[in-house]
Length: 200
DNA sequence: CACCCGATTATCT
DNA sequence: GATAATCGGGTGT
Image (cartoon, rainbow, N blue to C red; front, side):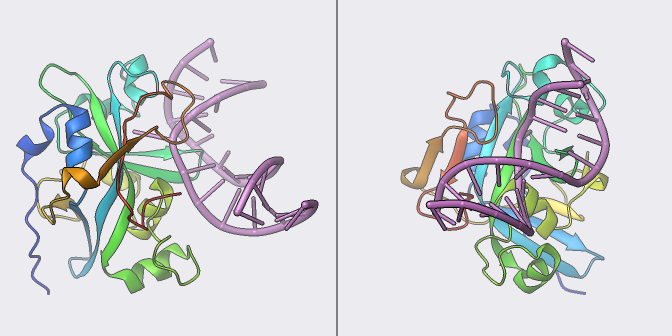
């Protein structure tokens, strides 16, 4: 059984304003451990922030059974089904004055288990720059589903986020969020500049 | 490459 | 009944 060497980010990392966390998650590693011996991972290269007073956020209209994790403690996974057939993976992040907030992880640069991800995802036909490029492709590549909703991402387990590299401020670009119809002017999508694994 | 559309479910009106 | 933090396959240029 391989030793898992990646160090999870502590809960305090997520206990800050959602926008800052969204930026600082770039360059971190999303780690998926399957059956305690298969390790899949990727460097986060694209994120989006969703806050409480944000018409585009699931939290905007108040708590319900789907979004309740967004109103809970920080550092936990919020996974939900979109368009009836894809899962989106988020991390709960907010400062103590906010009741809800999360960061959508939209794209990864594959690091560990690229061959396994290619088999599972069947996206991109042999190219590695489409495997986890987009929120639905990412969850498919790492086999993330509703069973991971509410999981603690600050401890080594089936799914966690770890330290990896630091992205210089120069290389963080803010853009409009993708696929929303409300609050479309906010520049709350963050990408690693010139990285080919960012969704198009 | 651009556009169009169907899939399929939780939530809201 | 409509819409949604999406994707892949189809058709046309």
